[in-house]
Length: 78
Image (tube, rainbow, N blue to C red; front, side, top):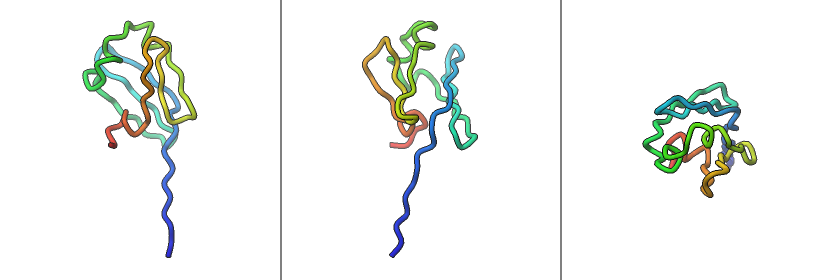
């Protein structure tokens, strides 16, 4: 019996447009996420959006809000 393990891609960087969040992952993929899918992030000012931390390479946190977003959640995997 073989066991298949999967590794989450790491978040390399995050950039913002006026209506989208662009997530650069370690597997050379980019995901564009509409900000309206994450109302708390959408409500942040431009400078608050830029004030984020990547935690353990797979989670995103903004200093202005208490939520932590996993890479799965950001790219739409539930």
